[in-house]
Length: 351
Image (cartoon, rainbow, N blue to C red):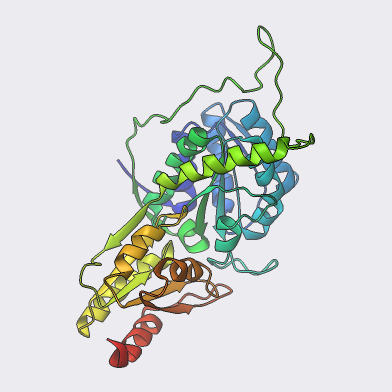
């Protein structure tokens, strides 16, 4: 059945259908529709909704709910996620699952409420402290706001680790038809014998990330790194018309939709364009990009930022291809004309 929904609401419904029964958040634009949706739906599904007194409180409430075995989520927009980074690091250190949604806005600082992609580094390089990693999912449609949020809970439980859904303000507030099975059930449910559900009949346990004895924290980190290595198999990436392409566009989220439109314009000018859309920003699809770079001389990355993902693309292609970039900041969105004019203009010399 199809529903007309904003991306924020689709994200919330994906969480509900995944079995999320604890949500703590704090209002901030442009993700407020998600918080409002969870306030209503949690009551309808016998879940717990808390509007916390701050972002710090919200993420630490999610820590507690996860430690008790619940599927738990929080959401915010860029400055709010900055405040939650300490708690995210605590969850990674304590090996607790949970889903964090960032509907990005312009920055740095308080910035503005326009859609942006300026939190790529924060999400994929670890905004919090310590050598931790988390899977970062990047939807590009309202449908994927539902699908990837639904999947995020199973991934979090599979690895006992926080998972982030990284969207932008345009995607969060845009309305689109969303289709899902009304009978869909939570997937990836796992036993959680470590959960703090009461000590009756079992030995006492503890969940913490404070490990003070000599060498204990280093051994814990080695175990975490092995887990992060195993997460590499969760890499996801969409490729479109990359075989025989003159230029490969690389974009994620809302920018991938604009990049798709550019492909048609470029074709009218005799330039064959392909598209690579990373769906997981971490793990990043280095191997996919490197394989295509061996066959295509030119890559063109476009982002709503000063250029953050472009660094990973350059790392992937190494010296095999030329990498160009078009980005705008502070809520600016690279247009189809801006992108295609740059490609066509330089294409007269290069392609």
